[in-house]
Length: 629
Image 1: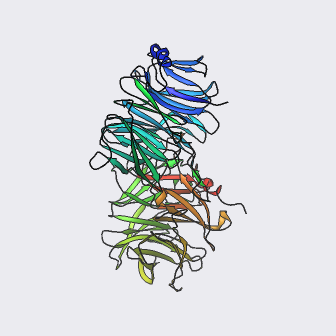
Image 2: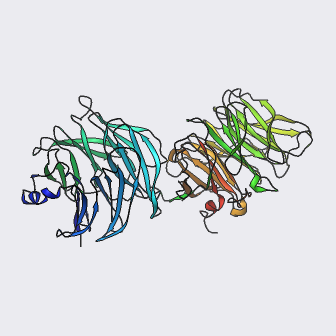
């Protein structure tokens, strides 16, 4: 049997008087604002000056919690339970409960920060399987806290993102289906933000103050309904502004005056009605079949499900904020894999070298580098050493590095190119001939192939071939075993060329950035070889939707898996997003990475907010996504 959940703050001394008056107009304590109403099975919640009290449908007390609570918010779950959250005013503690029938399944509280909370709202990301709460302050501060992941509640809420908000933020609501956070900026504006923790920090303006927009007073509360309508409560004159979802936009629909009230303070969404309360305690109900709570369920947006991987290691962050790290490469210490190295380009200054604890060991100040790649076994200065190559954007050259047996990196040959805007790069080492090559590209779509030769003491470079794609490329990777080059054309897709220096220069666009599975920009590329995968696969950074896609590396180049790298709550490592370069290795890198690793650049480094870094995922997590053979 279902009842109406009415999540309210009502003074116990006024409760009987409220019940005795008209349903459409009653006088209650000013603190007695209706905050949420849902159709579920848990009954009624009321707050006195000393406690929050849970009643059943007949008024009998089921349970109560001491404290002065405000901004009580509810979210129904697919299993029939309901999540509630509120701020206890005097202690500034966040309290939350999961209620099933007449039972508290779990509850918790956590002193969150010194943030004075004006509003809070739930967000349940079905796609990423995360449950979080937004806390909105009035001094340009906001926070996002993770409560559960994979249907498992954390021991305590985890702070996962800080938000920079307008200084006069007053209310919030989340479109659970689109993952959009809506925020009221007093009487000035209505904004939308992406609710995903690894999303872009940008915002979109929905409405502004008259005469340039429809707002004529301060917005005090927001609710999102099941028919994809955002309802915004305006304080004075008391009215509702409605905004209807049209495709990916939210468009103003109508203003509806609340004639029973002079001012409006709080808003509660119910099954078929909205409850509105004024600052002086007057309240009224507005009935409309559209006033139903939105279910916290996201539709599947692709036939290929979005999987989730977790990083188990991250490198130290660069010391400055903004776009810095671009592309990683990995070097294995064959005798002691725990002593392996990770090389990463710093687009402002040079190349950083990290150990397998994520600590920086070296920094080579060679200038503004972009992409980097690595191969093994090319004699230099009388010793067998390994080679890395990177593009230098300051003078449109290629910088080579020698890596000794202990993983120490030093500069070697630097050679000029005819490019005007050098960009991406990858290395190719033919298994047939043993010859090493560099593929470097320019933003105009030109790709040049250079042969790298060694006389035992020094290296030399010679241009041997020229390729071309229609627009800007960057990421590339060579399949050494099969003599194939894959090249990403950022806004278009992925090209396949023969890698041999004497082969035809004509390429084929084999994978398109269709905006569904692979979303432009196409950035980093890496190869999962035939062993241990039994067939080769191509990994691509789908930067446009902060994800990664695994394709067959042979015809028909079908997408077989896509995934995001989300936060690891147990280790306190955030996920990755806006990824430029990435790397994949099947070589052991030591403890925790015995089978290899996926290494990605993290464009937005959170927990805490810092400069960019690299995230590492054990390769076995990726192997589990491969189709069965």
